[in-house]
Image (spheres, helix red, strand yellow):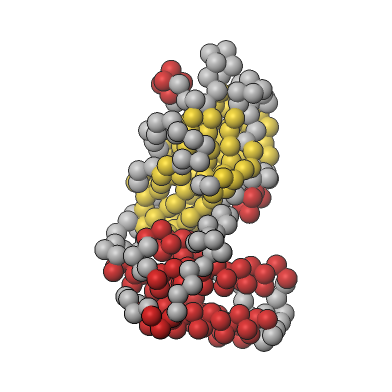
Length: 302
């Protein structure tokens, strides 16, 4: 018997830099790559925070809307402080890039745009320039999706009646949904399906962040954890799923040692797609792998 849940109670908070999330360094002492641009962005950030506090901007915005932007301002300033001190910090640069992606299509009035857009555009330009300085290149994301509480109502869950229901959790590696079938000896298949994402007329690849533990060799041979992509259809049941044949990584040492998969080419263009991840357990054979699913990125190929 299959049970279909159209909603599922499933964004990763900023991992602070240092004790209080900021590295305190006098601005005039920092003269590294892009330091002038970073200092200007920090000044713009402080001005926007003052305007927000004085209600010069976001006058007509909902409380949750202004709160989200206030958090973005605080977090992006922390990233800027770290990058001013160390422009070669690749981890912080990726976190800033991810935070900027979450602000795409953020609803603001025309008046507020004149305050906000130059700051966001300046951050995007900085990210690209620092990637080049670090010897890399900024990635163009078609989607960057996390299985987080924020995205709970965007997930579709389909499961056998006796199969495990994944639980929303978080640890040092971020927010995730955990599939743990051993305690209750769950049996059967559970699938989580992403919202639809639009792909343009370009080549893309996908990569997943996840971990497994207690995934026995015999269970691995039966491929009890699978990853799929499919073109959007009028009904979820009508989607034709393509198995991505992802070779699952070896068991993690701890439940926070998440891995990122290899880049997997996906041959879909100018269409909408969904991603499906399946987890199975088998009570009769004693196969109860533990599986944490953090998210995935769909990236345009260069």
